[in-house]
Length: 93
Image 1: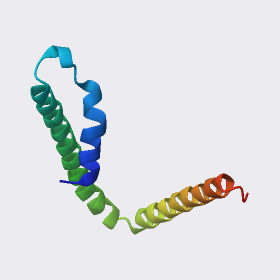
Image 2 (image 1 turned 135 degrees about the vertical axis):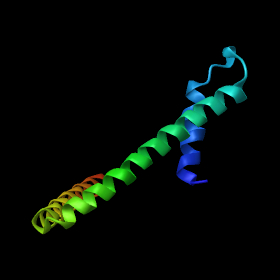
Image 3 (image 1 turned 90 degrees about the horizontal axis):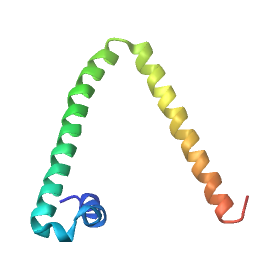
């Protein structure tokens, strides 16, 4: 099991369990199963769409290059923002 998924189950699910409603195990299993179905659906959707997007972009090298540049700029901006936040938090900036 993915440790991050285990942390989600351990930290979020207890908030939605009503102890007066009955079996805590049953409620946990229903909520956990619902999350697994939701995660699997999203993962399947991403897999299907990414295959189509790869085909679309491979036939259009200009769009592929633009997508790479835009993604690089966004990641650089996020990294710069995180660096500035860390410097501010450390009292350096």
